[in-house]
Picture 1 (cartoon, rainbow, N blue to C red):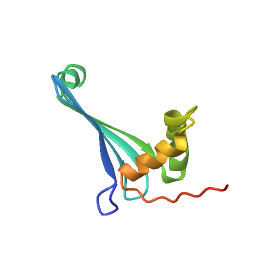
Picture 2 (picture 1 turned 60 degrees about the horizontal axis):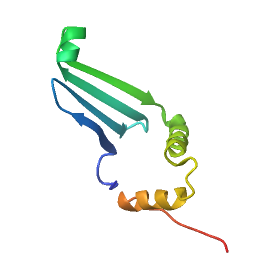
Picture 3 (picture 1 turned 180 degrees about the vertical axis):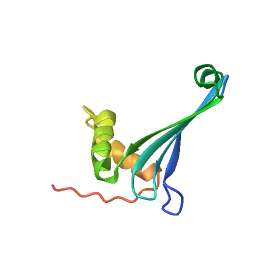
Picture 4 (picture 1 turned 90 degrees about the horizontal axis):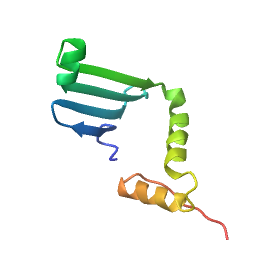
Amino acid sequence: MNQDKPLRVRLCESRGSTSVFIDAEITDDGSLQLSGQDVGEAPAKWWGDDDYEYWVHVRPENKDRVLLALLEKLYAGNSRADTEFADLLKAKGIPYEFDSYV
């Protein structure tokens, strides 16, 4: 992710009778936020309005725990975790350093 761009990614964009949009972002105060919007039949049926919005907030002091939980979910048991993680960082343009000892 380029540092000049907002720290936001689209996780889901599903269009249909009920369209679902979910984004993840780092807010101005440093919190992690997932925000979603359902539009269409389902919210109209359940809430009487065709638009339903929702948020999950993680305060800045807990973001590191989220990071570790996600890394564990993605790479637990993977003997190539370090290489695949470095490949992900490279693909997203995220600066990193690699060190080793022989």
